Amino acid sequence: MSKLVKSGIIVFVITALSKVLGFLRETFLAYQFGTSFESDAYFVALTPSTLAITFALSVSSVFIPLFVKNMNDKQEAHRFANNIIIIFFVVSIVLYLCLFLNGKAFISLIAPGLPQYAETLSIQMLKILFPLVFVSIVIQMYTDMLNSYEKFSASAMSLLPNNLLIIFYLVIVGKEFGIGGVAYITLAAFLTQLIILYYLLRKEQYQFRLSQKVFDIKTKEFLILVFPVLLSSAFSQVNAIVDRFIASNLSEGSISALMYSFRLRSMITGIFVTAIITVTFPKISKLALKLNKEDLVKLTQESLQMILLIVGPISVYLMLFSTDIIKLLFERGEFSHQATIATSGVFFYYSLGLIFIGIRDVVVRNFYALGDTKSPTIIIIASLFINIILSFVLVKIMGLNGLGLSSTLGILLSIMLLNKKLNSILPNIWSKQFIWTSIKITLSIIASGSLTHFMRENVYTFSWSFLSDFELSCIRLISYFILYVVIYLFILLFLKEKTTSNLIKKTLEKLRNR
Image 1: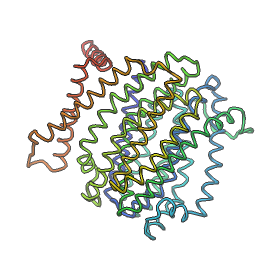
Image 2: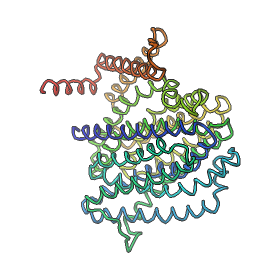
Image 3: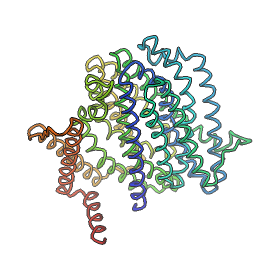
Image 4: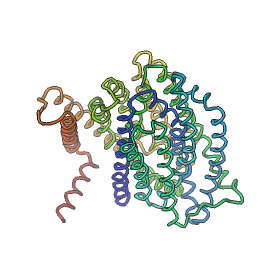
C-alpha cells in the first residue's frame, strides 16, 4: 500500500492545484457576470457537456476494468479504446445535428423560466459548446488509460492548462466580448487538454487509428456492461435537469446559485474522493480480475476509511462555515450579498452529502470491477426517483435549499441499499473491527465539529482595523480550520484510531531519520 499512498498523495496535490485553479475560474466568472440571466444562459448551454462529463466518469467505471484486462497486449488494448472512441464520435454527431435543429426546444425543456433574450443567448452558446460532449468523453478515456499505466501525475496535470487559459481570458479580456467569448475560450481550453493527453499517451505507443471492425467481441462486451451504467447516468442527468427546471421557476439567479454550489461541491469531491479512487480503482479491477476477494475486501475497507477519515471532517467544516466561505470566494463585483445567502444555503446541504458521495463511489466501483453493472444501476435509479420526488416536495418548504437537501437524502438512500447488496457479495467488508473503527472516526468528526462551533459562537473573535474584510475573513477561516484539525486529530489519538496513529508515527520516524 505504500506505493498506492505515495501515488495518492501526488494525485491529491496536483488535483488540488487544478481544482483550486478551476474554482478561481468560477470566481472570476462570478465577478464578471454574477448571478444574472446572462450567466444562467451560459450554465444552461453548458448542460450537455456537464452531463457528458458525468456520463464519461460513469463509463470509465466499465472502461478501466476492460482496458486493464487487455493491457498485456498494448496494441489490442489501444484498438479497443479507439473503437469505443469511434462509437462515441458517431453518437455525438447525431446528437449535435438533433440539437442544432431543435435547440430552442431543448433549452425550453431544461430551463423554461428563462426570459426571451437569455433563451436566445443560451441557444447560440449551445451550438458553440456542444462539441465538448465528445471532447469530454475522450478526455476521460485518455485519462483512464494513463491511470491504468500508473501515470497518475501526468493525467492530473493535463487539467492545469485548461483552467489557466480560461482564467487568463477572464482576467485580461473580461466582459469585452460578453458571455459568448467565454463560451469560445471554454471550447478552446478543453481542446488544449485533449491534445496534451494525446501527446502523453503517445509515449505509451498509443495512436488513434480507424479500425476495420469496430464492433468486435471486446466492444460488444463493453456495450453490454455499459448499458446499465448509461441508464443509471441518464437518470442521474434527468435529476440534474429537473433541479435546473425547478430552479428556473424560482427567483433570478437561482440556476447560477445552484450551479456555483454544485461546482464547489464537485471541486471538493474532485480533490479528495477522486484522488483516492483514481489510485485504487485500477488496483481494485486487477484484484477482481484475479478473484482475490480477501485483498479486495482489505483494499475496499482502507478506501472507505480514508474517505471517512478525510472527507468527513471537511464536510462538517464546510457546513459550519458555508456562508463565510461563499462570501470569501464569490461576494464581489456583480455577486451580491443576497446571492451569497442563496448560494450558501444550497451549499450547506450539498456539503452534508460529501461523505455520502465518497462512500457511494467506492462501493459502486466494487460492483463494476466484479462485472456487476445491473445491481448498482437498479439501486441508483430507485434512489433518483425518490430524489426527484423529494425535490418537488422540499422546494415548496425550503425554497432553493430543498434541492440541496433532496440530493443528499437521495445519495444516503443509495448507500444503504448498495451496502446491503455488496455485503452479500463480499460479506467480510463490514467486520466488527471495521465498524468499530468507523464509529470512532465518526465520533471524532462530530465532537471536533461541535467544539469548533462552540468556540466560534462563545469565544472572542479577533478584529484588527488595519486588515481588510477579505484578509480578516481569510485569517478567521484558516484559524478555525487549524483549530478544527488539531481537535480532530487529538480526539482520534485519544480514541486510539490506528490509521491516524500509524500515519503520525511514520511521519515522525521519517523526520527523525532526516
